Length: 249
Image (tube, rainbow, N blue to C red; front, side, top):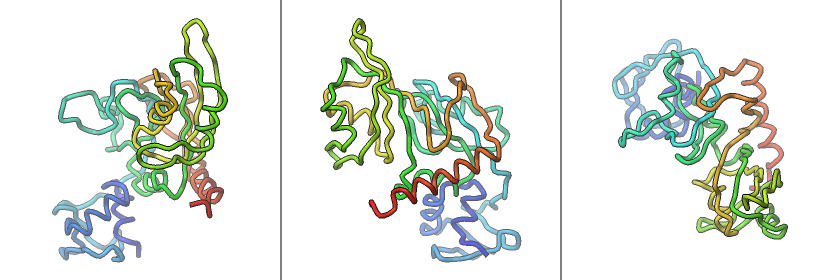
């Protein structure tokens, strides 16, 4: 027997947190009985489970990395008709969803999967999954400003957690610098806001690593399927990051 929200997430319905919302909203039925309690347990092989009246399907779990181009929405649909990540996953037979977000003007590594359980692990704040970005900024921030980013900087929604920040390149002629920054949070447009706070606007933002995943030369707009070993490594990296940060919350 397993918790209902876990079974829904494994079936690719949505992330576990979103599945919990479906349950409490009365949208989930087990053997034709509406379940609204999050502690309910079910047998996914024997029980008939439906969401909004439609039976869930236990499906093969798949995992892909997409090198998201700039100007693409991290969503399956967009009411404004802009390009979404779904435009880059048409060759994938399973219905996959993006894990986490990259804003419209950002590019780089995005995980796509139908594994709602793993998606929840990767995006839950308590796990502190590292995300590394390559940032091009106007000008060259001096050392004390870089230290502010490293130690935590005050934004309108509170202090940021310590980050890892390093120079990668400085171009005096173009008056810009390339910096890598690793953060352990997932606030909206956080990296851009951190650099805005020290008055060095971001010109280009590219995510190059998420947990143990790296782009590894994947061309822009292309996807790559993860191997079982890579998926295991990703899961292990989440647990490792959680253990490292345990007690700091």
